[in-house]
Image (tube, rainbow over all chains, first blue to last red; front, side, top):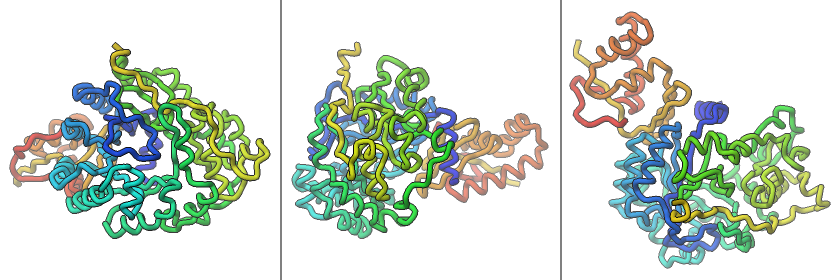
Length: 372
Length: 100
C-alpha cells in the first residue's frame, strides 16, 4: 500500500474529511450538452462566506480541496478564494474549461502553487468540441490556455467525458494530450440533470462501446486483471463500503448545501445554518450513508461483482435506493468482465437495462433568502 | 558553528491527521507524513528561530532527549526535507512571512 493510500485509509477509518469538492458557482460560459447543472445564480455564497467555509474545512482536517463549478473564473473573487485556500495550506486542485485563462492567469496560478488544473476537452477536433460546449472558438481558447499553464510548469490534466457525440474521438484527445505534454483522463459517466431531467442520459455511450473503452491499453494497462471475472466475495468484502462518500469525502454546493458526494444528491445540511463539522459529524443522513456496508445492499450483496464493482451509491440513490444497484455501474461491470450482474439476473436480462427514470434532483437548491 | 534558520516552503500543502503532519510539495507531488518530533520541528520552522533554539525549546523539552543527539537528528531531518524543497535553509533569518 502506498503512503497516500495508507493516509486515505486512516482518514476513512477515523471519519476525517480528507478531501472536499467545493463548487463556488454554477454559472458557466459554456453550455455543454451533457452538463447536469442549471447555470443560474440562486444566491451563491459571497467571498466572506466562502472564506469562512475554507476556514472550517481546514479546522476539520481537509487536505485535498477541489474548486470547481460552473466555471470558477466567472467569479471575480476567484483568485482571492485560491489565495485564502493556499494560505490555509490546502492542496488545491482546480477544475475549469480554461477559456478565460491567459498567460497572466496561468502565472498567478503557478505563483499560488496550485497542485493540478483539470480542464475539460471533448475532442481533438474544434468543430466537435465547440458543438458540445456550444461556445464558438472554445476549443482554440482551451488549448491555448493549456499551453500557457503547461509552460508555467503547472500539472495539467485533460478530462474527457465520453458520450455518443465524441466517442470516436477518444484516441484523438489522448494523442493531443500527449502532444501537449499533459495528463489525460476519461470518464464515461453521464449523470441526470440537477432538476431531475433524465433526457441527458440519452448521451451515454452504449454499453457495447464501453467494452472497447475498457480494452484501451493506454487507459487500462493491466487489462487481464481489470477485465477478469470477479473472484468470489469474501466475508471481508461484505464488510466493505462502496466508496469514500461521507466517510472521508464530501461535496459543498455554491449555496452552502453539503452532500456526501458531487453525484449523491442527499441533502445533509447547509453550512449557512450549521457549522461544517456539526453537519459532518451529526447529520443523520451523513451517518446513514456511512453505515452502509456491502452486506446491507439489496441485490448487490448477492452479486458476484460486489467486491470489484464501482457501484456508485449516489447514482443508486438517484435510481430510487441508495442501498440498491446503480444501473450504470452494472453495465460497466458486465461489459468489463462479460459476467452478468445479480441485478441483470434478477430482471432476467441478457444485457443490462438502461438507467431508471425516477427523477431525483441531483442538486437541491436552497436560495439564500429561504435560509434566512 | 554558524546558526541554521529554517522556513516552510510556500509551495507546500500541509495538514495534521491523527497527530501526524501530512506534507505535499506541489512542485513534484512528493508526499510525506512527519512523525511527532519532525512535526514539532516543522511547526516551529518560522524562519526566524535558529534550529538550535527550536531543538532546545521544543524537542528536548517535549520529548525528553539530550541536546547533542536531538540536534544531530534535527539536522538530518532538515537536510532531508530541504532536499525535497519542503523546508528552506539559511544561515540568516528569513524575512518573508510564513504560511500558517
